[in-house]
Image (cartoon, rainbow, N blue to C red):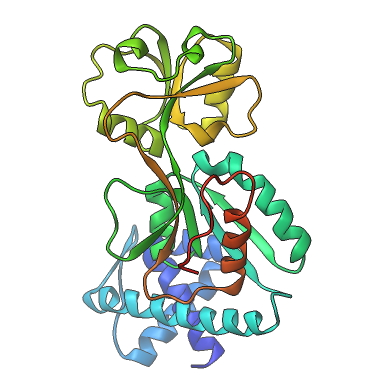
Length: 302
């Protein structure tokens, strides 16, 4: 496939994802007229209309719907070809795209610093989002792997490989009475005012799955940003609920495991099934699994 044809496919995919030529052109840093011209040329080459257009909007035709997954695969395969060549250069160049949930942020710094020192020629793109958003990026091939806890509902196209075992815990400042306990029951948690992670964050999903009745809880704040949540806990007498490793290297806070059934949060590397795995990804995961921050050891899947 010629370069121009591959570029046309990239333009088509972006336009299909945004359903707006103007937004697609902006995200690609090209003029809207250039994007429209290239898509029209693609339609002419295929002798098939891919978009239905009017003055206000665009939408995919039946041919466009069929074309979209095929175009994505072609683009992914071309990028995989480039990645394989980079791997042959012994990790001297290339890009590694990593998706991370906020709960993993505290254990990542050590590995990022080690990787940058060992492989200064490889660019790291690290994206922090909620689990469902990261999985969408993974399935579209926009990131190479995801570091997150195991989802409550596994995805058919994604493999999850265990890095470490973790538990859901009550988290509070170090002088809070709750941190003197070995375990915290739901009845004890009900005694305190809570600042919980927002729905959609993995710790909240895990908490809601084991504690289905919130009627006795005094939930004062819900936040979708774990770092701000920990700052609130450090500066007040609020209690939050997070995976215990979320507070790794966070000063002045302590965690106590919740005494609830099925209290398990498994830290995993999530990858696409039957996909090419970059050497840089394998090396990053190796460093992470050997880092002080990760409690469980190397797994044999690499």
